[in-house]
Image 1 (spheres, each protein chain N blue to C red):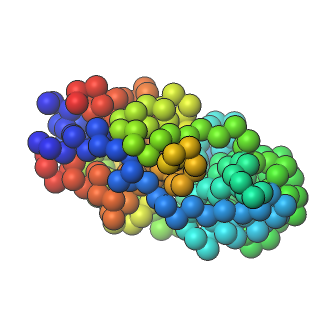
Image 2: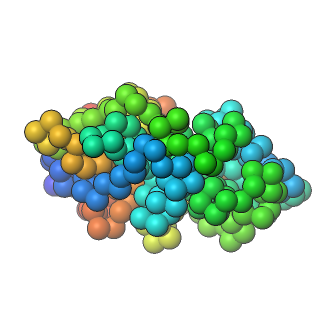
Length: 138
Length: 138
């Protein structure tokens, strides 16, 4: 039953290092194309440093539902208050943070710098195998 | 350690019965407004019976990235091949199905009729408490 111990290991193991960034001056349509091209549900918005975060849900709510033009800049709709967790935090703590804020993505920091992302979909990523391990050890 | 047994109990316990439906003739913008209003990431598309399924990801990929108008009907972009699981399937089997198809939503059937939805986000829904149970019993 070492499966459950997975939730106490560092989030490092399930962190995606392939952060996909976009400039805050780019258009919303370009942001969506990047999401599709890189098969991600969120983008880190950069202007030298990380200044925001943008998810599929933000685009549904702040663009399509409101009738905003696809050619507006990313800066007009991105989320500016970033929720982060240190890469050495246990998986359980990161999941608690996500429950608390009702979010599906957390930016992961290493020595205070954003270096990765943990997304809820990583739980069913066969390469990361957290759930597979749990399932197979039932 | 009865936590891990949660993955062998029926998906019934984690199934959302509040399916949000939309007519296939409605516009994409109306679909997005429904997603926001009901705080869901997907809609069941109906035309008397269920004829399709629509997710946030579909809108990003098939509408915004491609520059399709918000006023196109839902029928032009919905997914027609529905992936379903019986409400008595164990959670583990449904998660395997999601891994296999790389999807985050599965329609749940009861006596062959679609009656609910299991979405990956239900794993961090405090009301459903699957992960909370696992975390607290470490």
